[in-house]
Image (cartoon, rainbow, N blue to C red; front, side, top):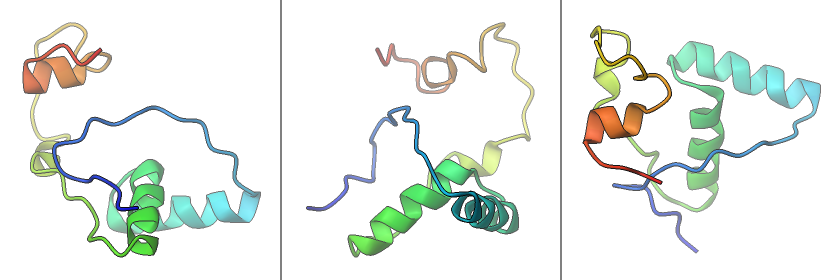
Length: 85
């Protein structure tokens, strides 16, 4: 099974990790400048022999200031202009 990686909406999940697994994921995320979720997703795609997903807008994270009052909660709608529910 291949994990769809392009133009795919994310799904929020809760994952339980052992302390040392979480610490390693957190360390890798810091080194790479990405989220822990991204580290875990990239690891899964690696196991599935796929290239890590690269968000075409990732270079904009933290570089622009938005004016939308709910941008952090409704970021997909604000960025992509569509209701993602």
